[in-house]
Length: 332
Length: 305
Ligand SMILES: Cc1ncc(C[n+]2csc(CCOP(=O)(O)OP(=O)(O)O)c2C)c(N)n1
Ligand SMILES: [Mg+2]
Image 1 (cartoon, rainbow over the protein chains, first blue to last red):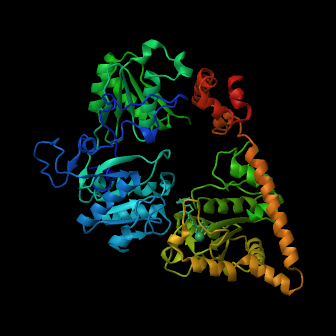
Image 2 (image 1 turned 60 degrees about the horizontal axis):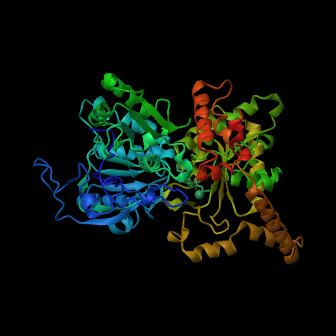
Image 3 (image 1 turned 180 degrees about the horizontal axis):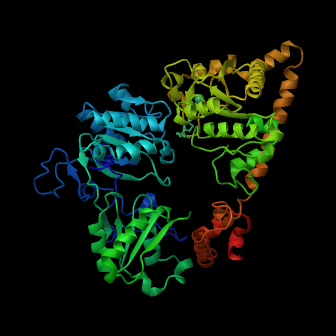
């Protein structure tokens, strides 16, 4: 089990992507000014019910998980939601189905500063959806305590930047309690939610309304390709989409700078989806085919997740690599 | 900000920091608005994560005590009743009382931390009740009474110096500044009755209370009030308009101050990466050209390096 349950049970994942990016004819020509697609106009957003229900790994809680995985999209409803509405919807499902579930954090009762808990305290009562005093270490420790008792604790840390006071609780306690107690205790019922990365425009997608999960440790190939693997996650998924677009059809101003031969390269775009455990199989399979890997992340380069991935990939794909693994990251 | 204005930091510096422009001396445009700082005014640069500077203030106080020329100085540390819930609050007061350090802790209890009322912040008697637990002199004062606050701070400072130990002061107030929302993303009427805010603004407002006191002494009148308001408003608007037009710091400043001393290779290479990109796309790519124009010297500091 993972330290904290960053999973779909309580938090439907930020909706994402489908492999229709290439095939759809809806890719619009860039406007005269040469603007490439932004998050708001992204072609990889799941804007139809069908594409949402085809999200790889999507599993509904009321389906038999031992049965074959289904790609049948019938009989399921989706609704148009942006990210915070999807997060809110997931918590509402958790609160409905699990009597032990509680949601708490700073300013959660009035709806949260990012509006993820709008209406939940009114709907489920202040005993289950409540404000905490302003202490991140307290919030994490409290959640750990509830989870140790087998309850479902869904804690909000208002901004990722403010999670550091909670690090001792998360790193020394949550991550180690199962091991140090010889498996007697665990905090599998703990979810820590926190907004990270640069704030994008509201992404609106179709999201299933039933109780569903998405797998941890499973990447998703958004755009198949054969010449280079472009690996990323979170907000930069959309920047990468923009970059691919600019490469294949550069605006007049950039035409001179993008050699003709590069415009038709087939780049495989992969959304890593979860950082730990990370999907080493999908990534190495892809890199063995393409021979090239570029990793894009917002965090700094030194000792970033990209460093971990490149070390592993160069070990596993050494003889297939045509170029060193390249990291495009935030500056330090 | 009151302390800074009192120490003649000036409205221009305030505005330049808020706009993060090339004349922002507080942090070269790297921090959010209202994160002021100025060594010349003995004001440590504000940090966003709440309460982190409470234990730092204990260290500052101790250093002052050990600096011969500064032995008549104390450290003063301001925070809200919400920040006082952080572990750092307890760590800071414990250190400043035990080591001990001449640090005056000024808690402004304005009843709210964003949307969270103080009734959900603590069950005990506010912040002041904690002082005796640390064995330090503590005072609670009507934070909307300007003269009472002044008297309490003076006495707190005197005791800090006399005992060489922390003092805790809790100023009771109510969040009502201007419109009284926490920030633009906050509609405080979602959790506070409009009439409550209006009443407080009218009746228990430190500015109007002090004005009434001055008027009752015959030192102030409506005319003087109007003149002052008009003048201050004009001063603020002048500074605002001036500041708004300035460019940002040079783009190359992005890479300075990460380390003191010799710059390691990774920073050098990352600067070169940006320079290379500017060289290639800075002129031809319109969105970059527009963006570059916002920086002092439009990226030339990097290109000509
Ligand atoms: C460690 C940390 N957690 C959360 C925040 C987000 N935040 C900014 S201001 C604020 C409320 C502060 O309330 P209070 O201390 O009472 O100060 P006031 O704004 O009332 O003066 C919060 C939660 C933060 N800046 N730092
Ligand atoms: Mg407050």
